[in-house]
Image (cartoon, rainbow, N blue to C red; front, side, top):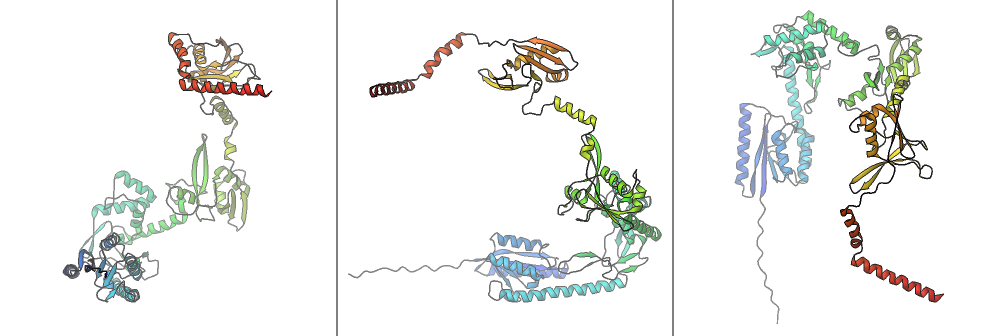
Length: 594
């Protein structure tokens, strides 16, 4: 009979709906562009929701942000985070320029989304990032978008520079001491008083650091309520705007994509516009301050009275890292010493610089440095002025070696070993350390008796031993010599403490009183102790050396009688019986064999 198989109709597989989101952006905050952004958001919201094969995943929109970088676009970053979390399958955007004007950023982002299986559709260019020729087209068109951005930037720069040539500043910049009223700079009296005080402090010889500390002590803050710091004070002292004049194009942006701002040191023309507003500082005072800043810069650290400087400051250089050696004060073993260390080491310790470790290890003692200077200069006693007149600078090519670069052009190499350790070991300090080590044992679990109990028979020290007893751990003191060479008696630590308290005339043993008064204890055979005090006199005491057995109380007797019964259980008794039978059997057969 033929076999019949029924074929069931296959159920049609419904296509999976895609989660679709859109991205929109405008680069300027204007009413017209704000309307454009709203129109983009509305358009994409209705477009996605009207498609039955799509699920609306949201519209991400950045307003007033340039497309040359992706870092500062909060909505763009949020969209990428949602893509990585698997919440989006397709991203719609109006054009490449709306998505990114930086070719590198665009390609990196699209490639990253493609690895996640996410499609990006650019409507204006009709490009799908998952298609075969999508990346080629993206690369070409993104380059055009970047070029367009650079062209716009150059046009804007041209307009800004044309206005600067006419004496018109680029926008209303912020400056402490002034505020803008329309297009005019107007003095803020309370802020102007602080500006004048900063200039006056500098004219009085105070450093910027001293002014910073002074303002901090008085609670004077910046316009934002922050502390005045060295960099803020420097900006005030060097800003020509306080003279009533403007210097335009002091900074410029070298790349419209990277937007890195640089100081203008002559790369582009600057425009000096006179008498544009009321002055806070007169021009003569300002010019004098600039010349004083240059003079102090030339002097380096020596110009700053608030720093600990001397003739060596800024003179000792490291040829490996290019930094100067810095002054350091230390107190070692109670002795004050001065050293010079490479600035890299100090900066790394303070976590203020990311530099590789300097190959020059160790520090230079100031004592050894002065000795080397005297030998090079032929001086019996060091003279700072002679050093400054003859030595240009000192380099440290390797540890404890100095190269003296003289002002006449010669270079003299001189070893400069540190002798700080030897210098501190004076006769008095050596005796102090000896007494400390003698009176303070450094072995593990040391007590007041460690090293102070002597054996009269062999001369060795007594050593502490621990023995376990029913009442807990007990401590005994034994001569550390072997029993074959010394037969002196041991002594219980509790007994020794009682005798020490008796000899010292105190109610109970005190380790501090014992250490302060008793030099040593000599143990003689037969239980005789000799206490030698630190003032020289001795006291004799005896102790009982007989072995003391505990009394036979009723509890002890009952425990002693019950012990054998507990030890000899039925299992153990049976095992011993079998063992004895085996032994007897072996003896019997051995006797037969003989």
